[in-house]
Length: 223
Image (cartoon, rainbow, N blue to C red; front, side, top):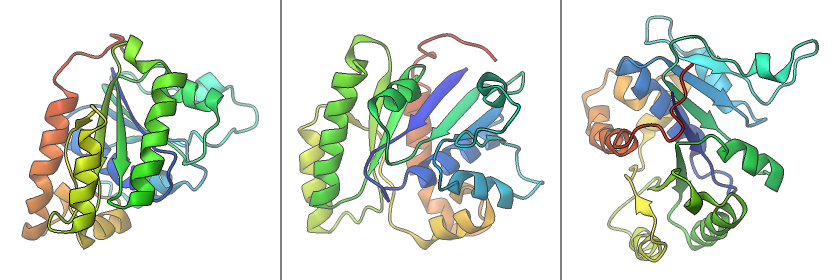
C-alpha cells in the first residue's frame, strides 16, 4: 500500500486540488484508493460528497473529526484491497502532527504558487520537514509541484530558478485553469471531465503518476 501525503504549511497553495485529482486518477487507473482529509476545512470531504456514484470509487476518511465512541485506529482504517492512500493536510501543523503525518509516507508532494511570499514560505517548510522529520534518513521521497503556472510570466520563471536551488525534484507543474474549479465543483478529477480542452492537462498528471510509481512503497505495507 502506497501512502502519498500532500502538504505545505502555506495556505491556499492547492493541496486539495492535488489530493483530489491524484485520488481520482488512481481510482480511474483501477487502484483501490482512499482519500484522507485531515484539514478542518473539509474541502476534500466535500469534494467526495459531490462525486457521482458512476465514477470510479474512492473511500473517504474524514480524519479531522473525532467521533464519540470510536477509537482513532478504527476511524482511520481502510477497506481490504486498498492500494493507494492520498492524504490531504491542513496548513497549520505543530511538530507532533507534522511527524505523525509523514511517519508512514512513501512520498510527500508540496504544491507551491509562483509568488515570492509562497516561495519563501515553502523553503521554510521544506527546511522544517528535513530537520524535524529527518526525511533524508529514510526512503520517503519529496516532490515539488508548481501550481497555477503560467510559464511566460516573470513570477513563474523566478519560481523555477528558486526551486532549482533546493535540490528537490520538481515532479510536474499544473497550469492555471478554470477546469480545476469545475472539477472541484462536481467531485471529479480534471481528467474525468467530458471536455476535450480539459484533457490538455492529462500529461502533467501522468508525469506525476509515473514519478510516484517509479519505486516500490518504502514500507511494504498491505491493507
